[in-house]
Amino acid sequence: MNLDLVEIAARAARWPWHWTGLVLLCAWGTVAAQPVRTTPTRSLAATCAACHGTDGRAVEGQAMPALAGLARERIAAELRAFREGSRPGTVMPQIVKGYSDPQIDALAAYFAGVPARSTP
Amino acid sequence: MKRREMVQGLLSGGALAALGGCATPTGVPASAKVVVIGAGYGGATAAKYVRLFSEGAVDVVVVEPQAAFVSCPMSNLVVGGLRSLDDITRSYDGLRKRHGVTVVQDAAVSIDLQGKQVMLARGARIRYDKLVLAPGVELMFDAVQGLAQAQAEGRVLQAWKAGPETEALARQVQAMRDGGVFAITIPEAPYRCPPGPYERASVVAAYLKQHKPRSKVLILDANPDVVSKPGLFKKAWADLYPGLVEYRPLHKTAAVDARTMSVKFELSEDVKADVLNVLPPMRAGALAVQAGLANANQRWCQVDYASFASVLARDVHVVGDSILAAPLMPKSAHMANAHAKVAAAAIVAELSGGPIDARPMLTNTCYSFVSESEAIHVASVHEFVAAEQTFKSVPGSGGVSSARSAAEAAYALGWAANIWADTLG
Image (tube, rainbow over all chains, first blue to last red; front, side):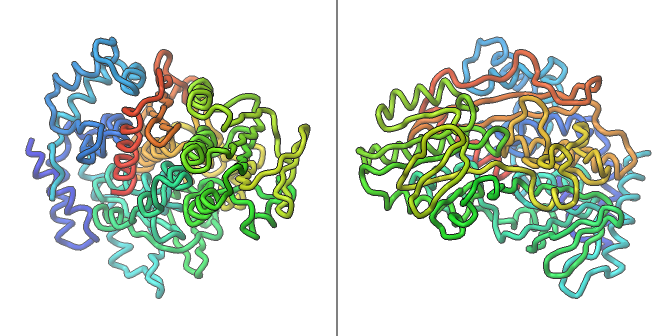
């Protein structure tokens, strides 16, 4: 899946309605129907966004790490380490205990699939 | 329905509205798929996430009287002289330019629930398919005798909605004599931002300790104990401000007298102060009350938690401080941001004829500064329990800081930067 293409198409779709946007949007309709973009997972990922940035793209230079583009295995392993207490923390050990194993795996897959840098 | 058809179906409505030139002479669109009233944490997040979740296919108009977003979280740092109002003010340009949201600077004055339209102060009307109502709280000045007049005279401030009044309260603190008394009164819960009053008392104490050490901070609380993070706040006051901060529970404010700068309570003796910060009881924003949607005790809006739709109007989704909260769900900025995402997902699903998320989740983190350099937090995770049609705290999750720390102060600032970007950017 070409995520850059999704980004470009999604940005185009945000323009005011005119025919260029329409054509791109219709093209996007076929590209974006990937599991990683389904709404329940995206909604679940949005529960992380207040602290880690929309789609895991955190504000640079702050204490919270960005999640976008990290390796799926790494995200899942760190979340489980917070949950099990092998990684110390302040908020994260308390938050991650609210998520099930399938949810942790879904979040890891989602953030791993988002390009690390926002489109310019 | 396939996603492609869904997007095209959504598009035809939005495209027709725009191509038909359905704009009023004032430049305000005559209709939108989604209209959002209020661009605070709840409303602005809802607007952005309807655009994101629909991949730009649903047009969104936001009605907000303020020209810019001023954050309530971190505003206590302004009261304590640690930040300026500019530091906590952000533009709505991100919503406009990055997300294609139409932000109309005007006040919504009434809602026609049957006709599904919103009337604005300057005369425009906007029809909606879905309305997001995020009016925040209204301060019930009439619940405290003398408060409305004392407020109008600028003598007794609240600064519970961040803005010029926040700076005015900071100036009152800075102008106070050494040896003076800063008194803050707290209404019975629920009110906006449970830890907020205690954080304010703490950062004012930090300022006074450094600049006017003979002064005193009095916390006069209608509740039986500190409402949020009680152990951490009380330890901070004992460790950092001994003899400076005094906490008095079960002090329900009945009246204020701006002439004598005194507070009367239902049961306790009057208190005089040099700076009086009286927080009256609160309820859902005035527009929600006026529209008849504040059906819980005439104060809060009861919603279907799966979608945040009002139980009285299925196409009006109420988010943020205005709702009748589920158990353990605080009236916080983070929670408003979380409500808004669940509502946005449900709105996009319903507009496209699809099912809504069966198990939405909410998270919350509230940081509070207890001094100029240290902070504490409370965190929680809430899952929708379909059998009970409510959100419940996930067993074993959540908690508070083990101790106040400088690290948590850094996290608090990082939280602000990130939630501002997530809400507006």
